[in-house]
Amino acid sequence: MEYRDLDYEYVAELYQRQQDLQVEAQEIIHELDIVSRLAVVGEVYQIGSLVSGLMVWRDIDFTIVCRQRSSLDIFNAMLPILSDEHVIKVEFLNEMGLHEPSGKPEDERLYFVLRYETAPGHIWKMDFSFWFTMEGRGEIMHPHQLREQLTEETRLAILWLKDLWRRSPNYPYEVGGYEIYDAVLNFDVRTPERLRAYLIAHGLPVD
Image (cartoon, rainbow, N blue to C red; front, top):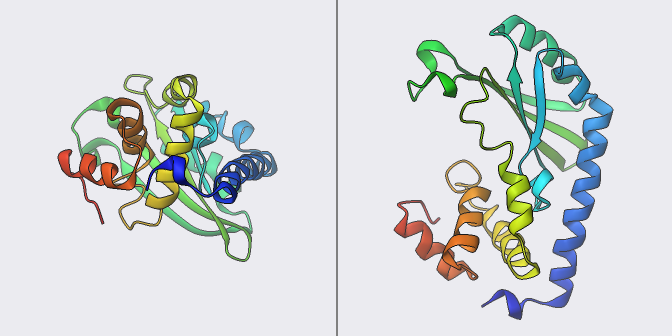
């Protein structure tokens, strides 16, 4: 099956869901006052599908480039967000110093993942990466550049393939939006079968 054969109602639902998620995400960001609260430690950037306009599920991503290497300042800035009554789960990863997996100073960060419930069954995943240098921060400009590359054809193909793949246990950490964007824009992938072939060729899981 190709994206051209998709049911009209499903296509309309994909587009409407993307718009609705955009609105809901911005409401959450405003209600939590995220930008102002985190600006005390550094420059705050919205990244990911919220910026590119390719949302298919409840996912918000932020990159913060810190002015100082102060874990205490970061935790103090995050505390009002972490303690909000809608937050039902928090995960934290320290990738600083000896805990940084790549051995590169530019890859050092503190990383928070929150689950934020707006209504029963409506749970947002919210990612906050606190970095200490602008070096290597390609994720800041990538969604803007991606948005400029999109045509109606590639936008629909990406939304469809992301909607299919988000149900995989490997999504989004092993196979995420980036791989689907690359497959569609650089390898002319337009079907689930060709996406599987792309993943296999790149040594990525397909289940």
